[in-house]
Length: 458
Image (cartoon, rainbow, N blue to C red):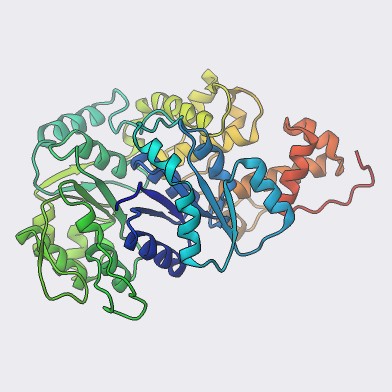
């Protein structure tokens, strides 16, 4: 029996592999994610119907996600996992709408049994289209610039062709969004869209993810598992950062592209698959070929239909329309009312060269929405850094490096600490300045582990 798809958010690869293998062996298709941002992206791209998420994640925690999952129509069942339980955390999970709170280590059979309790509601959801409050994925062609119009014309010409497509572009320029558009408007739109970011994945893990494995193929392979190539049959397989793949994996991918056949790890029999393969890279593959790090024959195979995404600095006239669309999504995710930018704010966005492209633009808007209680964001609410900033004289260079690597959670924590200091640790005054209730601020202090030493209990 095949169950509805489950989103599993877990940054520990051992735990992720164990949960995924067990659930898929029992008929639950799994969409994996390792961070808050990746979970949000996967949630928008795939029709998941239930969620299992670890509490602590590299760029936030589960509560950054729960409100989104519970504000879909219909709401999704959410199972929260944690290795450090406390009564306060459990109460907060209940208040947030979490359906089940489980403490690690967790028996896989027990986890599946908990998931199965939601079977009736999940199956009922599967009969209806899921409508996210984030209306639709960002169009890859938003804007009026000549560069984006040329890209749209090229994409329209090749969208019906099943040959491999290589999408090239800087980090954050929207390669994944373009890949999804090609799938949604192509001949295999009715099939699955399966994506994998190959960056930083060890050879063994990447091989298992792509090609699957038979039971006993390696230590820990207690069940046979289909790989993403099989999962993408009659649909689209999108491999991001293809240049990071190990040469041994490259040769196996070449065989899939040339013969439409592959073997699971530990298997003797070949399997046949029909699918479209899209790839993307932020590093010029020609350079990797010259350095002997990427197979020349594979490069020629995947580069049959190349598309190049222009960086945001080459289409600055598109920044205002992109900002408005992204701000609309940010407002929905944060469950806030409509957010807008003043004319001065839009002009300020046009003064930055956006080395992080659309992803950086979104981060700037998210940060502004978090730190401002106003619905109209002003120029002063927008903070960004130059592409090659120099540390100011009163701040060491390593401090600037740390700031550039801060997450939104770090920014929010820093701002709360700053406001508390300005208000001499008076929680009531700090809450008023932040535009939140006193109880909400107390919850945020606990969440971020911020200690205070105020003599005023108010």
